[in-house]
Structure formats: C-alpha cells, structure tokens
Amino acid sequence: MTIRQIAKAFGVAPSTVSVVLNNRPGVRSELRQKIREALVENGYQIREQATHQGNILFIYYKSTNYLAARKDDTIAQTLSGIEDACMDRKFTFSITNASPSTLDEILLSITPEVHSGVILLGTEYYQEPSQAFFSLPVPLVILDGYFPEYPLNTVNIDNSYGIHEALKLLRENNHPKIGYIKSSIEFGCLRDRARCIYSSLSRLGWPSEPEYVIQVSQEPEKSRQEIDEFLHVCPAVPSAFIADNDIIAASAVQSLQHNGFRIPEDVSVIGFDDSSICTILTPCLTTVRYDLNGMAQLATLRLIDMIESPTPHEIIKSTVGTKLIQRQSVAPYLEEKPLIDSNHQKTEQ
Image (tube, rainbow, N blue to C red; front, side, top):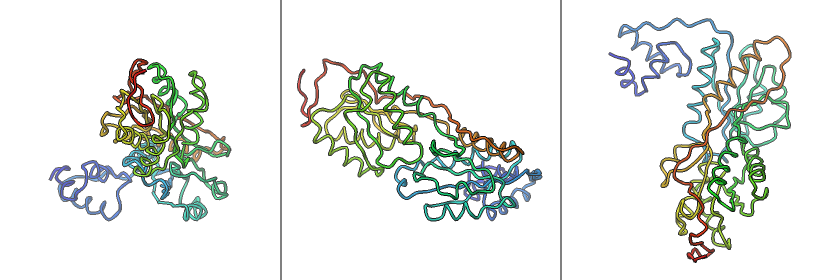
C-alpha cells in the first residue's frame, strides 16, 4: 500500500501518515500506533526519534463568548507553526485545552520536570491576567494576546500597519466619511486594533473619533440585527466602513445589501483576518491578511531561546507584519452618484 492508500484506509490526510512515518508529534497515540503497524507491514521504516531537548506545553484557550468568531483554520495553522519550530530545535510539544474556569488550575500545575515552557493562545482571552501568569516556574509566551501593561512576552499582529494600509486605500478612493463597526468584546488584539483605527483616521485627515460607530456582537445573526437597527435610525450612511474582523464585515455587507445598498457602488467595506468567508461573499471582501503559522513559529522559537538561555529573560513584545488584500468590496467614492437617506431611498445631489 502507498502512503495515500494507508491514509485513505484510516480516514486521515496523507500528511498525517507522513507525520507518523517521520516520528513527528501531533497524532494521538492510539491512531499513531495503528498507522505505524500499517506502515511497517507495507515495508516502510519508521524514522528513529531524535533526542529531544525539552517539551513545550501549548494551551489552547477557548471562550464561549468567542465561539461565533472562531476561524476554522486557527488551530491547524498554529499547531503547524509550533511543530515546525520544535522539529528545528529538537523539542517536543503537548497540547491541552483551557477555559475561563480551568486556565489558572492548569498554569499552577505546571512543573519544570514535565514542561520546559508554555505557549498560550490568547486570541480568545480578554480578561486581566491573573497571578497564575506570573507564578510559572517555566518561561511563558502568549500568542495573539494583547497585554501592553504587563511584563508578559507576546507575539501579535502588526495592527498598526494593516489598519493604516486599509484606511489609506479608502483615502485614495476619496471616501469623505468612514464608519467603524466595532466588536462589543475586545478579545485578543482587538483593543489594539481599535486604537490603531482611531490613530490612523487622524493621521489620514479624518476625525479621530468616527461619527459612525456601531458596536456589535460576534454572533452573525445578532450583529446583522444590530447593524440593521443602526441603518434604520442613522440619518445618513458613510460611504465606507471598516470592521474589526471579517465575521463582522460579512454581517455588515449582508445587512447593507438587505437594506438596499449596493456593495461597493454605494458603500465600501473592509474586514480584517482574510478568513475563508472573504471569498464566499458577493462581492469578495477586501481585508488584511497575517501569517498565523509564522506567528506560531516565532513564538515557539522565542520560547525555546528563553528555555535554553541561562541568563534572566528580557520581556519581548513582537509583532508580525500584515498585507492588504484588495478584492471587490471597495470602490472609489463618486460625488455625483445618488445618496441614500435613512429611508434607503436614492436622492439626487
């Protein structure tokens, strides 16, 4: 049997069989053993496991408040980045899930004999860090968690550049007023993203406090209702909106279209994250892309450097660059085009 045939027999991807063949981490033990047996039976030789320098604990923190906005590929990209860095530096890693009720217990149970360091995925974490964060006997790096006021090592998205490029695109397209659709829960790096939006608006010549701000929930159905309510009471609608993320931007597009607006002829919309939904929408959504896999690799390599260094560790807060992805949801503002009033009736200027 070929690797592809073995993968099909176990209902997994060929890459999973390759992981077992190369003795890499990331496959649960029971399934790993069955695949190993099939590989050996078919003449494959399992690569000998290298001597490892230590084990990293990856904590996947999940909040019920974030469920609707969770990206399908977040965990896959994160684990891939951690695994690549661990292989390069001859470390292993293990995974555990955490919730608001279990995170402190997990952190307080960590011992240097079992785990050499910890990576915490902070995308869904929006509370103040507890004392357990600072009592760890091993190094900690937080991936996609914004803690500017605390001595915590973090790796985050460069929101400033990404937001500035998005708003600069709207300025280049002559949009006179910009609306901001803001998450009501500032999880992960959204607090920083909001700060960057206000700052970039000011630098590009718009008021630093947008006249049109809509606070919405993460649940798409609820956020569409909240945007509908705003559109029904707003006397005039800005020619462009920027949203905290793609999920919110998609809700905005659907709500605007439902209320008689054309995207992008009447209103332009920009999201953030480059989620899969961007290319499912009609029109496809202009957004900001970042490399989560690269962020995970950077966080892991930083953690390993801390583990291997005998000297006291300096606090480092790193950011990873972004790229503006232009699609069809942004168009130039034309002064002579009809306006749409709060009743969604077109009126000539």
